[in-house]
Length: 401
Image (cartoon, rainbow, N blue to C red; front, side):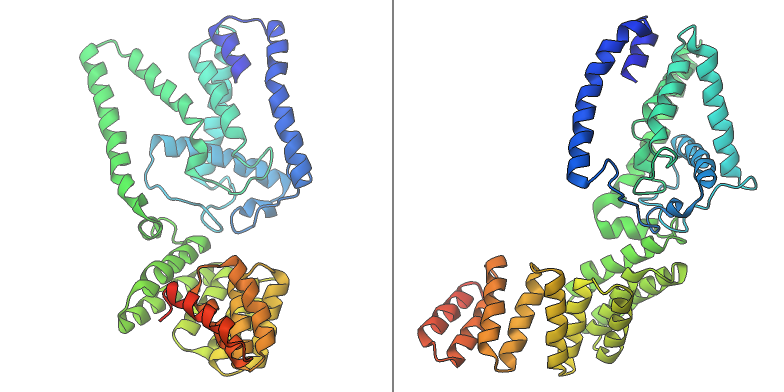
C-alpha cells in the first residue's frame, strides 16, 4: 500500500521504490522470523476451529469462491451496516453458491473493483487507488490467502473502510450544487452516525451484546452457547433468590441445548449443560453428562474437576479424588482442583496427603481463606496445634466465617 500510494500521489517511479520497499520488508521479516521460532512456523499449523471458521472443511475452490462472497458481504456491510453482529460462527453463513444473491454481490463487487483499478491505473485516478487499497486490505480476511481464526467478522473491514470513506468523499466532491452537496453530507452523517449511536449501548456488557444479537445469529451454535454462559455466570449465579436462580439456570440450559441442536458435536455446551444440572442439584444427570464430555475430550481439566464435584455431592469420594488427580495431571497449576483434592483428602482423614495438595493451592492462591482453614484442620488432626492455630488466624484475617 505504501509504495502504491507513492506511485499514485507522488508520481514516484517503481524502480525508485525498490530500496524503500526493502527497508519496509526488514521489520516484517524480523517479526515473521520471531513468530516462526516461537510458534514453530509462520502459521504454526494453528488450524482454526471449524466452529469459528467452517471454511477449514472447504475444498480449495470452495474457499476461493466463498472468499469472493465474503468480499461482497464486506461491501454490503459498509453500505448497509444493519443488522450488525459480534461474530459469525458455524452455520451463520453458507458457502458460496450461484443461487445465493450474496455470492453475486461478491462477484460483481470483485469485477467492479478490478475494472476500476485497471481503468484508472495509468492515469493515477484516486478511485483506482481506492479499488487497489480495498482489494489489498480485505484479501487477508477472505480466507483465500490463508485461513484465519474466523470466517467473517465486521471488525475485519476496519482497514478497508478507508476506501469506502474515499468513495463517499469522491461522491460528495462531484456534486456541483453546494446546497445539495451539504445536504448529502448531513444526510450521510445523520444516517450512519445514528446507526452507530443506536448500536453503542449494545456493547455495555457481554450479556447485553449477546442478548441483542441473538436474533441476528439464531443459526449460530456459538452465539447460543455464549448467551447461555452469560445468563448462567452473570445472572443466575449472582442472584440470591433461589427460584429466580433456578429459572435463569433453566433458561441458560435452553440456550446450550439450542447450540447442540445446531452443532451436535460441539463439546463446550455439553459441559455447561452438565454444570447446570450440577447447580440445579441433579447430580446423577450431571455425572452422566460429564462422562459424555470426557469420553469425547479426556484432556478437559475443568471437566474432570466438575465431575469430581458431582461425585462428592453424591458421597463418591474415592471416585472424586481420582477425577481431581486427573485434572491436576493435565494442568498442574489448576488451583481449584488442588484445593478440592486437599479438602476431600482431609474429609477422608488422609491429612498428610491433604496438606501436600493444600500447600500447593495456597502458593497459587494466597488469598483464599478456605485453603488456610482446611490446612488448619489437617494440622490440628495431626496434633500440630501451633501450626493449625496460625492457619486458623490467617483464614480469619482473610474473611473465613
